[in-house]
Image (tube, rainbow, N blue to C red; front, side, top):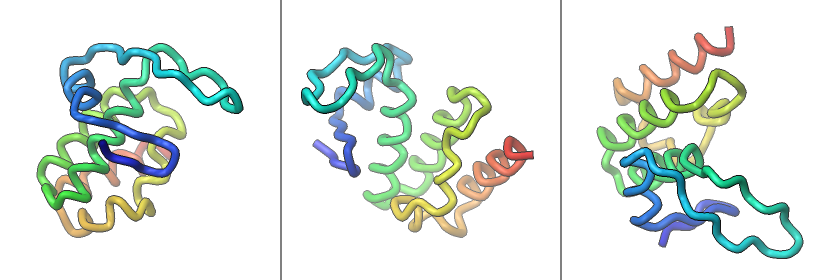
Length: 107
């Protein structure tokens, strides 16, 4: 089980994201709103974070590419350039490509 701030993910989460399947709703604490049915974007982001933390830079860049490709153009991912989980990716060509993609989206 990986923990990233308020998020948790396990290998089942990653497999569901890789297969493009919606994730099952997990019970939410009574003080938080119920999560939406489909959490694939969050799973993709967590998979990229986990790969970066493990030091598998190519995998992390590929997972970011998949995550941003699945996300509609919006504010999604705007924290990636400053997110401490992605610090190990600085200088990696795949990470630079995704930062360029975010810059293009920002206009």
